[in-house]
Length: 361
Ligand code: FNR
Image (tube, rainbow, N blue to C red; front, top):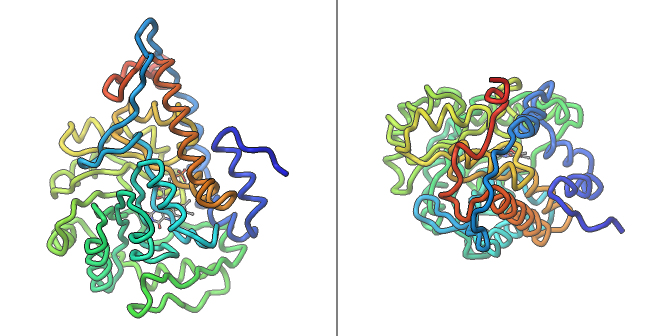
């Protein structure tokens, strides 16, 4: 039997062994040359610490709050699709693990389990991730269902007017199963072009004309706070604040959309500076260590979201695996805080890290 993993990355190999190749490739892959996929992780490695010594760290408090919801650590579950391809319990298992760890789960629009199944399974604070299809009534229905089922915020993913070119899925002829949330609303069965059906599906459904002016419409159909996911520039960050969005998630969709997009950690500070504290900024992409969480917070993120490691934990060991992934990141983050001389989240400052650029000066 394989040894118990000692870090989050070791779950990846367990997931590879547990999953059919088509699904493992779907979860792990990125777009085209996968340059950004590597960079999301590598860019963290180029940031080093400026740890402070002789500070009382006999108690380290990781807790924080996002949009007023208290969580045990600034590490939350990113929206990722189709968890039942990883484990029969799917998003229900993920949500239960998030609840045990007292953190937020962002449920993907493309989840395998329904909004209702996830809502009744546990009392985790849940946000709902939204894609806007050409048929706006679908978004409206799903937002209402999320709201009715106690989800606390909408996360609008805005970086996929088209699907990124994921070559492993094309090679494997990856077929995306029916999304249960859309049962009765919409058939997700589309004819394949002979490669992956994901691309034809997105072309048929997703609204590529979606623009900033549509935020007003989204605002008109929900009272929930709205975060926008997929911001990579100061220009879009400023725009997001101007149109009244409630939070920003710096993300390149786990490097699955536009290859050669920058590593998210490398543009976080640009966005944080443009936003000037007016709304919370979160980030995702490449978080694999507690040190990564610390670096993101030092560069101005309020919290990070974790995508693939959660899926790998789920594929390898179900709910327990997801819990272990979240606990490992929390434990490493706590240790990083202690060794950097920070006893609470507010103690983490820009001066605790040194970026590559600063090292060259
Ligand atoms: C995603 N991501 C994603 N994002 C989103 O808004 N809606 C979705 O349905 C999905 N689905 C999805 C599936 C898979 C398999 C992956 C790997 C990613 C992107 C996700 O929310 C997040 O931005 C990245 O996963 C973060 O990068 P890491 O943590 O995977 O490196």
